[in-house]
Image (cartoon, rainbow, N blue to C red; front, side):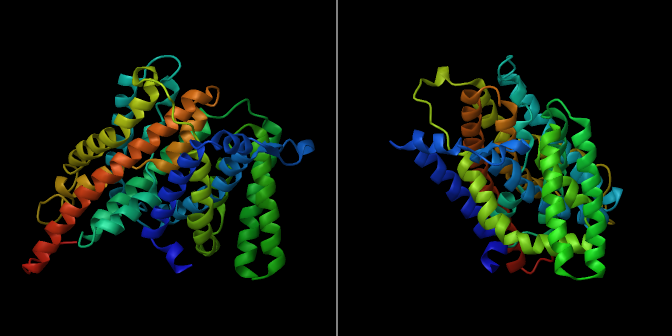
Length: 389
C-alpha cells in the first residue's frame, strides 16, 4: 500500500496501463476487446444499463473526482489556496495554461467537426505531473512543487467546470433536486460519522453516495460531478480520512483501469493528411501551449508581488519545470476527449491518440527540464549556497 501512496509508482502504472490498452487494441484480437468494452450491463429498469467503458468513466472516475475534491476543499480552506495572496499567482499562471492551449488548438482545429475539442488540452494530470517531478526533481526547492500543485488544482477546477457546463445534456430537474438532497444528507451523515464512529453510518453514507451518483447521472449532468459535490460537502476530517483509505485504490486500480479503457483505440491506418486536425491540435496544444501559457503568465504574475528582498518568489527558470509538467493532461484530457466527440467515435479515438502523444511529449520534455533545474540546485547546495525556500 505504501508504494501506491507514493508519487512515482502510480505514474508508472498509469503509463503502463495506457500502453497496454493501446497495444492490445491494435493486435489481431483488438477489435474483440473494444467490442467487449461496449458490452452493456446494469439494471435497465433503473436507467443504469451502461457499457463497461461507461461504468469505468462515469462511476469509477467519480471516485477519483471525489478524492480530488477532498484535496481541493483542504487547499481552499487550510492549504496552498486558502488566501487570495497565495492563490493569485498560480491562478494567473493557470489562466495562461488554459487560454494559450485553447488558442493553439483553435488555430489548427477550428472546423465545425473538430471545434468542440478546444477544452481537451487545458487539463493537467496532478498524479502524473507530481510523479514525474518526484522522479527527476531531487534537489528542487519545495516552492516549485507547491506552485505546480496549486496550478494543477486550479486546472482541475476549470476541468470540472467544463464538464459540468459544456457536457451536460437535457437536464431533468426532478432527478437533479433529488441528487442535491442526497448530497446534503451525505454531508450531514459525514458529521454524524465524525462524532459517532460506527459502521452503520459508514454503510449508510456509501448507499447515499451511490444513490446521489445515480440521480446525477439520470439528471443529464455528467455523473463525475457527483464525486466532485460529495468531496466538497463532506466534513473535512472525515473526507481526509476517507481519501487516505481510497488513495491506493484510486492510484492502483481506478486510474489505471480508466487509462486502459481510454487507450483502447485503433491506430488509424491512413495517411497523415487524412487524420483529424483535432489530433494534431492536441499534440501541439498540450506540450507547447501549456509551456508557453504557464511560463508567460507566470512571468507576468511575478510583477504582482515580490519577496522582502524585491525578488520574484519564482524565477522564470523555476516556472519552466512546472509549465512543462502542466502539459501532461492524461486523465482529465482523456475524459474530455470522449465527451467532446461523443457523437463522432472516429474523431474521439484520434483525439485520445493526440492526448497520449501530447502527454508523452510533455513527459519527456519535462523530464529533461526538471532534471536540468534540479541539477542546478544540487550544484548550488554542493557549493554551500543557501537556497531561499
